[in-house]
Image (cartoon, rainbow, N blue to C red; front, side, top):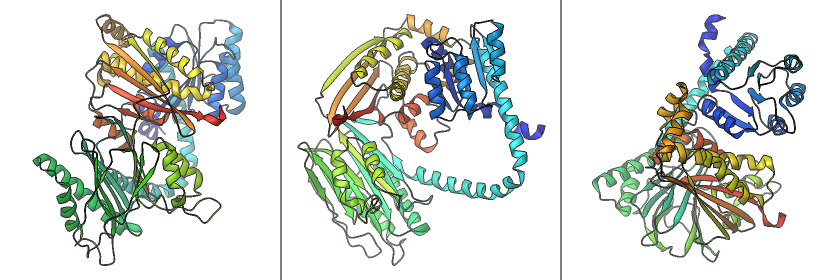
Length: 567
């Protein structure tokens, strides 16, 4: 048993935990966040026992830390309700009460550890480590019971490992120079992509490449047919197109028409006699307001102008095959266009629930009614029964210059400003009567991004330094010391927009710091488990999307309120 236990370290166990912390004091919440944000997988907070119990019902947690003295339900009252549903989850109770009745009641409720206030970081961490050891022991016992089954699963595990490697390779071939980044030249533009293969080996691929400050290249590839051959052709083509773009940019001679003809000639001898590819080559030049394209039997480009009219651009080339003639490049004036959608045919060929109609009959209206990629994804998902093909689309939206309401405020670079900013932000949302459980994710997102602006932006503490300070128990001491010499500000700009039948809130948080290389955010897509930017990952999960400026010192986060007819 001991040798097997060594394989599963306490640190590895803790890093996989979903933790719920029930604490009504914001400062104490912040202490816990500093301690655990880089230790556990997911960290949730509840402000009282009732909210903690509701979160426990809604989510799957591995460990709970709870204060005793809280409004609505105190810690023991909440734990008593939880124990009705789960007798074994480790629970750590924090209290300054020495009443023997309270302690006895806690023991009867199978409390894992009892910690007396004031909180000492090392003691809390030690208590979590002890709880992790209990979980490891339980896991070991389960492994012994399932030993024979585990042997059989090893075969599937190896297969899954190979599939994961293949998918990781596909993600490395795909290039997106605008992961979680907005364009801010003539106007603010949001670029979002959705890539969901039906199988591990996808016949779809795409890339979004920055040519210069005003020019962006888009590629969407769809290997015709199913299986390995279609996937290989799509990935080979995408890889070579990206290589060609890199080479042209390095040499300073990017030429769209030459890129099209060069890459088409490259793939033709690789394709089988009966094989073909559907491809979109698209260039958007914001300075010249021009869209140039070579479409090889792809679905129409959908565009929306400022008057909400729908414009469609059809393919100007046959499917790409060994017998393909000289490709044609066309141009279109997009000075009046505010929104674009480029996509493969996987999304439109899905059958609608309860009918034989394809989604192609609905995509145009859904596109017009969608403000974000997530809107379109939600509309599509609600109409189809099951995904029938690889789905890839690129959603581009130029944000308007005027809004229904606009709220702007600046804050000092202090820890106290976090509470001040949170309260101010909450007053903006109060008029929408958002339920507490629904506002939780919005508030968490705001707090995470504001703290990023505070500690990483204006105080310039990087992730490595932060981790070291936490281990040395000098984190808050250092923050308060750095605050004293800082004259930098954090700016919050909140815009309210009415679009179609919905209300959107766009929150932009900007700091006076030096920013960061936003290209590292691509790691969120390629490996969320290895990415250190917990704030970015949590914010992405609790919003319609986050977008940084190129410098990395300003972030825009989007939320949808409700349908206006339901207000």
